[in-house]
Image 1 (cartoon, rainbow, N blue to C red):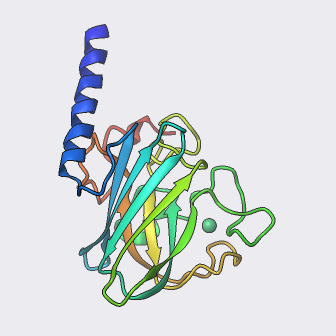
Image 2 (cartoon, rainbow, N blue to C red):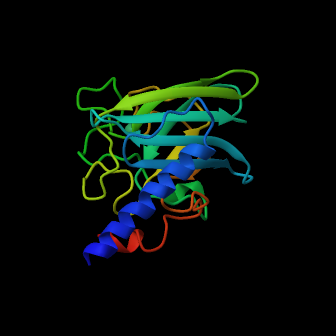
Length: 201
Ligand code: ZN
C-alpha cells in the first residue's frame, strides 16, 4: 500500500504541474493543493475561470478572471453544494459551515462563502484576487471547498447589499461553476466528480 500511496502523490504532483503549465503566465506556481472552477452562464457560455490555491501561510489565494459577465456590480459567493444543474438553484444557499448570518454588515456575519462584490467594466473583463483564512481545500475540514458534496461559485445579477438575509438581495443567479481539485477533470461543471462525492456524508 505504501507504493500505491507514493504513486498517488506523484500523480497528483504531475497534475498540478500540468495545470500550472497551461495557466496564463501571470499565475503563480501553486504552493499547495489547488482547485479550479469554470463558471458558465445560463446559456452554457464560459464567463469566468477561478483558481484557488492554498499558500504556505495556510491562507487560501483565490484568483478570478471574468470575461463576459454583464457590466455592473454583482454579488459573488461560494454556495453550499457543488451542483449547477438542472438549474443554478441546485447549488443551494451560501456556504456557511459555522452558521453565521449573511453579510459583513450584520453582527453575526458573514457567511464563510461571502465574497466582495465584483465591479465589471463595460468590456466585461475583470481579474480580482482574494485572500481568506475561512475557506480551505482540506477534504476533512468543515470549511473545505472540496470535501463533502463539493461547492460552487455563483455570480448574481445584482449587488450584494452585505446585510439582507439570507443572500444580500443579490438577485438571480447568472453564472455558476463547481469547484474541483485540479487532479480532477476541470470540465466537471455539471456536478461534483463521482467518487469524491461518494465520500461525503
Ligand atoms: Zn452569504
